[in-house]
Amino acid sequence: MGLSLMKSKAFRRHAVISTALLVGASLLAPMSSPASADSCTDTLTKAQAASYVRMSSYQQPPHGWFDINGGKYQGIDVEVIEEVLKGLNIKSWDYVTADWGAMIPGLNACRWDIMSIGMTYTKLRSEMVQFSLPVYQYGVAMLVAKGNPKKIKGKADWKGKKVGGIIGSTDDQVIGGVKGATYVPFTKYSDLYRALSTGRIDAGMVDELQGAYDFKLQPQPKITLLKEWTGKAVGISSIVMRTGDTAWVAAVNDQLKIMRANGKLKAILLKYGMPASAYVTCDAPTSFTKDGIAQCL
Image (cartoon, rainbow, N blue to C red):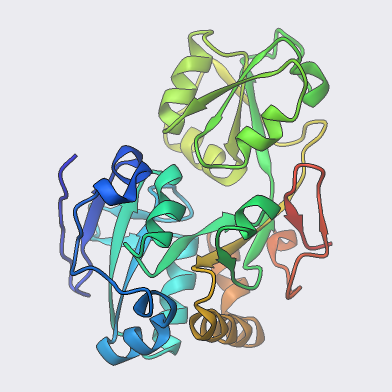
């Protein structure tokens, strides 16, 4: 896949990278001069000296997406990360849009400095990357055929069923943890919706905010979205950085604390329709679900 760049007034460029290009990071041609190991764990010094960072993102409204009409990125995570960067006196940045499964490999290969979109904090991911303070907390909706003719009300009903999820998300852990369930991976929600509508899968998992947003923009007459289902668990979402990038992580966390104190963080969440319960103030997970998903209870 080629690399396309799009500029806006704030010197932001929009690039697209596929998961396949990043599965083997060594196969990806550098988007800039190769970074040394030292520079990959001293992002704060580098970013403040250049007043610039490169961020990975994922086209996932209402979390973060490029608005063609407005010519800029917008969304919950976009507004949070941009407020953090402004607080650190970083004036310009690039968004590199990648498939979800490419984001952690690209970060650890030093292709970008930070992940602009919130990612669910899990035990498994915490072994590969460093999470910021919790930004918000919410759950995942379940998708079934219209009217739920197969009576799928939760995990106990997945046995013998094909359940779709997004590659690189927590779906593989949650679905794979149910004996007898078959996990069917997708790279895009649009493909998952189509598969459920045509009967290729029996159920699916979707970020509950994105599902509601997608269905508002484009109704899915053959699908029912269940926000409440047996076995549902909420999870913490955080900004993601490289392990060992200590000063960068501390600086980002300091800005999040400021945003909590001045009310800006909560205001951004409410602006995009997050429930008040999504706003959390713990500094680290207080518990984990049996699927390894971090919670702030």
